[in-house]
Image (cartoon, rainbow, N blue to C red; front, side):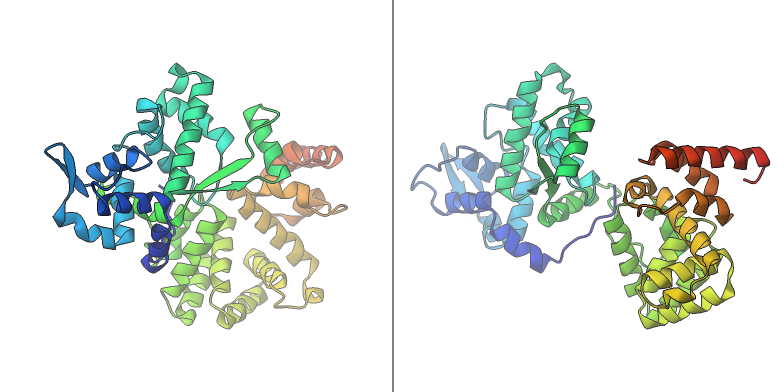
Amino acid sequence: MPPVLLRPEAELRPAAERSPLLDEVRGYVAGLGDSEPGDPLVPRWAEVSGLVRVVEGKHVPVEENATLLDDPLRLWERLFSTISEAGTPEASGMLFSRLVASIPLTLYQSGPVAVPVELLFEVLAPVLDLGQVSDESARYAIAVTLDFLDRFGAIEQATADTAVLARIAEIAGKPDPSPYLVSLTPLAVWALNRELRAAGVDAPVIGDAAEEGLGELSPRLVGSAPEIIDAELKAWVRHRSPTDAAAEASAFLHAARLPVERLFALIALGETGEIGLKTAAGIRAEGGLVGAAAAMWLSERGAVDRETITRDEVVVGMADHYAAMHALGAFVHQLADMDDGFDIVDLLTSSGHPDRLDLLNVVGTDHPDRNMAKKARTASFKLRSSGGV
């Protein structure tokens, strides 16, 4: 499971209070016998969550759970934990029960990255054996489930921009995919994390590893989303005084063997404030690969005059940054955004960076400019042939 950011309960409580389905369940329990609820799911849900029980064919309140009605956050959590037991809002049968349990977990595992609704079917099909269900029925059941989770306050939906929608269409192989992206609300992330931990699952929370050194934390950050990396390093720094955090980050920067480790160390330094800038300036003065990485980092932050940055610092520092982005899976996406006229091949070839061959191979296969891609392949071939790798 990816580490997740948990919001304070004081922020989550108002969100639970706003849940329409929470209101309906509360209203049903408070007005037992007065009238039938508009949604037949509500009585069943109140029962499986322990708010009411059947006595002589009728629902009566369960007194020992009555305090839940006055605590919206705990009530929301209780209802969420029984969500797949309460039945189905539509005639979707067992499929709904499986989907309502699987979709939140799938979204949880995607971290803070919103998942295209169009691709949920592809993700869930092998897990739930949807091959036995018609495509139309399965997609309808997913839509019903998402509507229900939205009404409950467990998910939030956004609309993809043009570029993302084009990418979704390419992946899904459909010219007109659903434009919606879906993610868990902070409320659902909190409830699912508590549920997973109670079940003995390793479900880390951002800040859990704040006591560890950067050497232990870094390997877990490599596969994480940018938002997770940023939040974890912020939590790591907050666990220390600025001076101690800057000293630890500096030591890790000097000992780092990988570009991505140097990047993490610099990000941590940036969270320490003025002491971090002074520390990075001292590292820059030492020269070498680490000094170049520090120089480019300082330049990007406007902490040094760009005119003072040497060509060697630019070439080596940028190559190291690209190598770090490659380790994080982001370098290929940066290629299309590079300024026209910027010769990435010349920079990488002349940098002498230990990862320059890997980066040239990426440029050679993925750069949108065919001439630049061809130049990268030629440069890569020459490097391998000359033994200058």
